[in-house]
Length: 285
Ligand SMILES: [Zn+2]
Image (tube, rainbow, N blue to C red; front, side, top):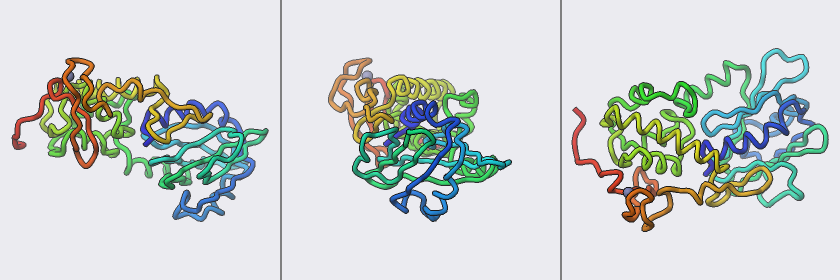
């Protein structure tokens, strides 16, 4: 499932081809992509729009659009969910093609999604965008707002395991199962430790661990475990650099003890229980 580094990789690859270009036509082949909006209406709204900028918030890819004579921008928000992908100029439409966008000139973008959980939404004006994101996304890592103090405020009083806390998009935006495991290992924090019980030093290490794991993922152009592909169809390489994720039974890169797989919040979770000591059972004060 694409997480922040995978979506950021797509953004960096698409932006030079999209920004400043006009969308000539759109074909939405699967109405589920824009649900509950009528795909015909979304097609009409996108046709002729100029793509001003391509940004990202959490796992959302955000196209800022402007039509001729329009004062307020519109935004196309794309969420890839489980298996969504955006391809630039594929030679043929791959299986599971759900939408086609033709840009001015010869380039085109194809949206593919085998499991069809991905979404596309139109939002109107900066106010519309901010209101939509405010209820869905918490602090954005890799920004100056992502501080230990901010993390402490979010975690205060939370009994949930820290891994569940980190996976909650309304707390920390963009982190999914891969980068949560990698960040907690880097921080030396057991995933079952209650978020609200973390010490100041642990919260500082967690902040740094999240930042370092995400930066490493972006550097490796994302992780390809199943479906994630670059816009040219290539694979990311972060899966070859995992410290603990999906490495059950293999030696911990720090101490050599075998990495264990446990389940936290219903998610397969990888941990070195020497480097990330299991919490003793305690109650919040
Ligand atoms: Zn270890």
